Length: 281
Image 1 (cartoon, rainbow, N blue to C red):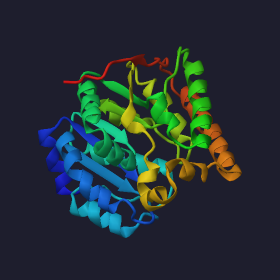
Image 2: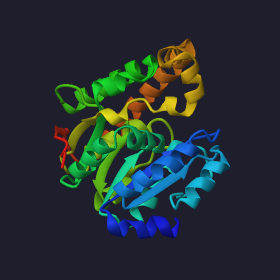
Image 3: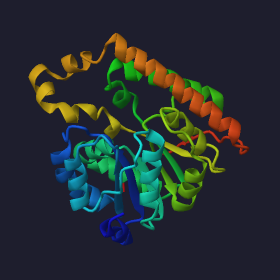
């Protein structure tokens, strides 16, 4: 972890733990553009990158004091846990996990909402952050529909009424709970997206839950020339393929396996999330 990651935490109470997979370097310019905003919001920014990520991205992150390493293997679990460890080492009071491309998109499109979410997080030991239904629906159809099914399954398992979006993933934990969370996380691949929500509800604290519009679809940010050329709706339809449906169904099944397995292991009774309100100031 760089000195910048460690020292910045003295001015803010929340550190960002983020992961990035960018094999083409498409987000380099956006990283430079958005990092000042993220620095104003967070005491530390710790970004881990997947092994296939373009080395230019690692260099930019290192230059900006946000590079927190790359695991040797290309698996989600080690990558995500490395980000949490990097942010926890900053000494910040709380840790916010969020995929880095989502953090960039949120900071660029709705910075005030992101700031409001962080103010809300200061009042809770566990905050689960989901997408509004409109933000979730902005994603391509195979992702939206399969994730809706997985979210509904998780809610049913927990006895939750109404919609809860567990699958961004985005959450804020106190540093102590983040370290406990890290000790309990074991999965390596797509099961992680189910394991993590199960761990959040078995920390012995009722999670607060908010929904945010800034978590709308971030993937088009990587493909701006193509999106401009044919339009977002047409570009979204290019991802509505039989192969994508198959992959997303397989992922949703893995999410459910991870969720159920984590609940079986934990002895703590799961505590369903309770809705909270964003603090505007």
